[in-house]
Length: 163
Image: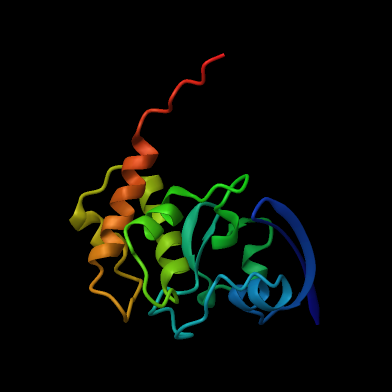
């Protein structure tokens, strides 16, 4: 029997009926067509499906859509604001933090959570913060540099706009 759920996804209220067994990753990809959240291993090991639920990094392949009822969900598609890339997206571009790009959305979403909790992490703290995310293409060096780039950009003082 379908269950009606309501949540805010990337700033937009969404109300849909879902089967109680629908995984959140399936709901995002198949129902809402938000395909930036990737399905990698289906076992929560790879982190490709990482999103934010109420501001916390969550592997969406391990959460049912009904469990997100009433929550605020942010996917990789929701990070850009007013046509501007999020500093982490920019960092991955500028510091070559991706190769095939499959793990990138999950890496970025985990890093958003990390930088929210620790705005100026050390290299070791970044590596520990990414422990639940696998990249099969790189040695993580440029991924770490991408997150350091974003942390620096987020922490730099805002320039005053002349009136």
